[in-house]
Structure formats: C-alpha cells, structure tokens
Length: 309
Image (tube, rainbow, N blue to C red):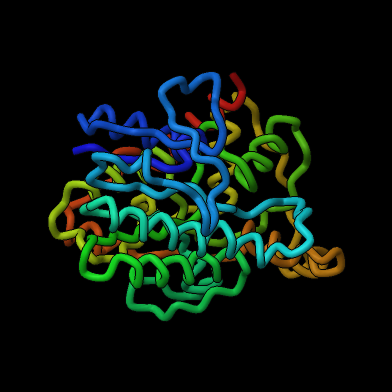
C-alpha cells in the first residue's frame, strides 16, 4: 500500500515514517519546505485552502495527516484562532477533497483528546460529547467534521485522538519538563497526586500503522494512549532516571500552585501539569486488537536519555 504522510519532518512524522517503512508500506513523505536530511520528501508549501496536493497524491491509497498548527508556549500570532482554522480546518478540508479526487481509499487523521474538553474524574471515551475549550482543540474538532463531510462515502476516514505525546525530540511541555529536570531546577510538585493518560510517540506510530490496514477501522474514531495512567511525580522520576540524575522535588499544596498560576495568567498550563485527564482505550483494544508496544516508564526513560545525548 502506498501511504502519504503529511508533516513528515515533525516530531511525530519521523517516527511514523520509520514505523510504516518497517511494516513494509510504500511511504511518501510530504513537508512544507525542502529538508536537507529528507532528500526524497515532496515539498508542498503552506497548508491551507489553496494547497496543491495533486502531485503528492498520485498513486496514493492511504493518507496519514499529521501536519497541523499546534499549541505554542509563546503565542505570537495576532489572531491565533484564525491561524488554527486556516491550517487545521481549511487545510484538512482541502487535502480531503483532493484525496477524494485522487481516488485515495483511506484517510487517517490524528486529532486531539482535547476535542472532548479538559477532562474530569472519569476516563474519557469515544461516547463523550465533543466539547473543546481551547482554540487548538476547537480547530481539531472542526477539522474532523470538515474531513468527514468532504470524504462522504467515497473515502474511509479513521480518526485517532491522542493525549500528550512524548518521546525523543518532543516539543512543548514535555521538553520543558525534561529541561528543568536536567538543569536541576527545584520543582514544587512533590504533593501532586494526579492521574494522566499520555502516549509515547512509538505507540502512536504503531496505532497509525494498524489503522492503515485494519478493515474494521473504517469510519471509526479511536482514543489512543499508553496502557497505564501516570502521575506527574512518576513522569519526573522516570525522566530523572533517563537523565541519570535525581530530580529536585519539594512539596507545595496543589491549590497553592493553582492560585499562583492564576495570578500570572498561567492556569491552563498549570492544570495540564497537575490536573487529571484519563482516557479509555477499550475501543481500539477490543475492536482492532491494538496493544502499545512500549511501556510508559521505559519509553519515558528512553526519551529523556535521548534528549541528554
């Protein structure tokens, strides 16, 4: 099967290319602009409502759409909501329409658990309502809808909704946490007792590979996560082991952490660290037989040790 992967130069894209190639797919990588380390990748320019996908989609049977505008720690766009919609919604719609026109059989879209909201006490499942609370999550929810409308009955759509994805070279909050532990910065999280679902990048790539070939995946949405939930303190401990150093943890009541974050307008970032958000992977496990190949502790130690190297 010939599979086209968008966003192939990204953190997730590189792992997906390796996994699909190892699983004997014929992989075509697409990137926004030419990359010196990816001589065979096709450059398609900016992803929006006007992107020309005609050359990249020739002969393709399955599309894996990873390219997106994601969360940024320091937002600089004058209108972030419009930027999210341009890339994530209109760009996805344009690609889906082009894929239908090119005769693509299946379209795999990597979405976010954030389309279900900020979480709560119970594990989120596919049956929970779509209720995004951030511009990024809202754009992913709208992109799912735009994709299904564009595909109609002409193309099979598979949606994978992921929580925090971590691994070597991961950006965002995970990279920041690894950096803090590596520098020995005292972290005020010893009293945090939360539960979060996370997803190793290799585990995500294995789910994508399965979704590309499993007949029962057609038309379905699946929540994907590692096989166990973790706490923030466990994550920090595993990162420390991967870095070969003991993390500097000290106790601060979680309510006080939230109060301090609120004073600096950082409530959402703090909640992503110390709040709880768990998901149920029962559907993908039962329907497709998916089992994540890596255990969370092992994958997180490897990610931290790779960061150190």
